[in-house]
Structures are given as C-alpha cells and as structure tokens.
Length: 140
Image (cartoon, rainbow, N blue to C red):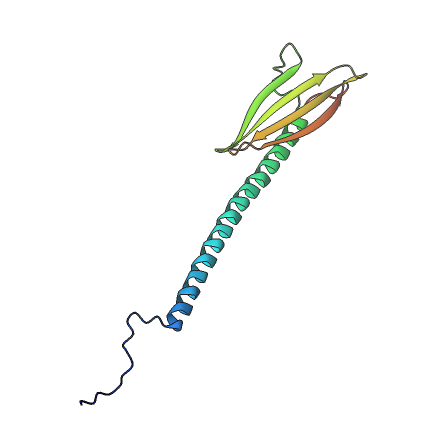
C-alpha cells in the first residue's frame, strides 16, 4: 500500500472577509459623496436665488426713492391717470413701474407707486409706495 499524506482539499474562489469589509466601506463612501454633492448643489441654487432676491429688493427701493422724489416725471400720464414705464437696473434685472395720480385729495395729489420685478425663475417681487404732493408744492 502506498501512503499518501492527507491534505485538505484546495478551495477555489476563496473570498476574504477583509475584501468584503473593504467593498462595504467603498460603497458607503460613494453614497456619502453623492449625498454631499447634492447638498452642495442645492445650497448653491439657494444662494443664487437669495442673491437675486436681495438685488431685486435694493433695486426696487432705489427706484421707489427716485420716483418719490419726482412722481410726475416726464408728465406722460395716460387717459386713466397712470404712467407705466420700465427701469433697467442690470442686464438681468428690470423694474416695471406703474405710477397712478389721484387728484381727489383736497389741495393736492396722491401718487400711488407700484413696482414689480420678475426673476428669471418666475418669482414675482413687488413693492408699493405712495407720495402725497400738496398743490402749493411744486415738483422740483
């Protein structure tokens, strides 16, 4: 009889637990990275909208002060007593203005000023102001 040594049978395709753990860690980091990239892009969009909102408010306030200083302007009121015009503040920012004259108050005129800005995303910003000009006051 021949003697053969007993050897354990060879295992083919052995999968190490270390490789399994490493694969799980890599997948976790890939998932985390995708979530963080989405959060950063959402924050960027929010920051851009906020910046446009701030610019629109500042533009409307400055245009309102200009109109309140001289509500008559070029004296181009239509038959309804309104003056409609647009002030271009920047390339992507225009303020639509409607000035309505109401001569019914005693001894003066009440000017109602409505300002509207529409953002490229469709958001509408509006600001209302008014100025009373007594008849004794002249426009500068």
